[in-house]
Length: 188
Ligand SMILES: C[S@@+](CC[C@H](N)C(=O)[O-])C[C@H]1O[C@@H](n2cnc3c(N)ncnc32)[C@H](O)[C@@H]1O
Image (tube, rainbow, N blue to C red; front, top):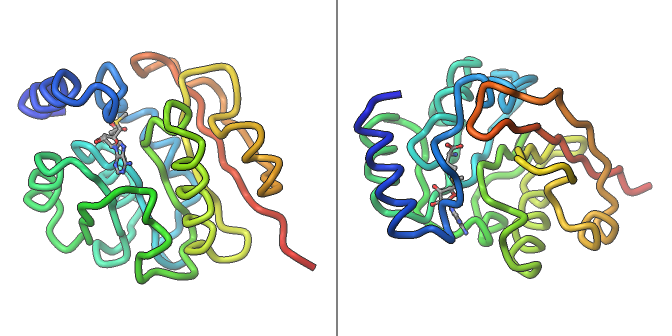
């Protein structure tokens, strides 16, 4: 990671602590785990809370074409950096709560770097329901967490009927984290 990225990130943590909610950008080890299973031939990918683009880079490294990646970020300074660094990627400066309004359907995955659990329940609900509107059947909502519990509020998990798989602990991250892959059972 460039030292300028770290300085920008820390500057935004200080200016907008309730939006960034992290000590540092995610490590390449955590980002690689977030991108596991992404297949360049399997349709578009949506990213939420792209920050300085560490997860964006990991998704592109899987071979996804830039025009097949839609990255949402609400912070204008991060968006300017992302547009400069990732030409061709669709950078959307907007709230992740409006993800359902993206002109994207049949996405293979929504990969989230958002501080989801620290968000109000209504916003979490908008993010999850909007994400599953964009996902193809069987597509996954991927979310990391530093804590011991699944990073979606229990009531919401139950309402939507989410099931999940969880990764091993990624120690090379500050702080260590796990990755959850949430899916929604098909309606029969
Ligand atoms: C923990 S940082 C993660 C940044 C980067 N993905 C990473 O893993 O290093 C959370 C990011 O989510 C963004 N964010 C927070 N709330 C958001 C919202 N409602 N809509 C879009 N982005 C949001 C912040 O601006 C910040 O860039």
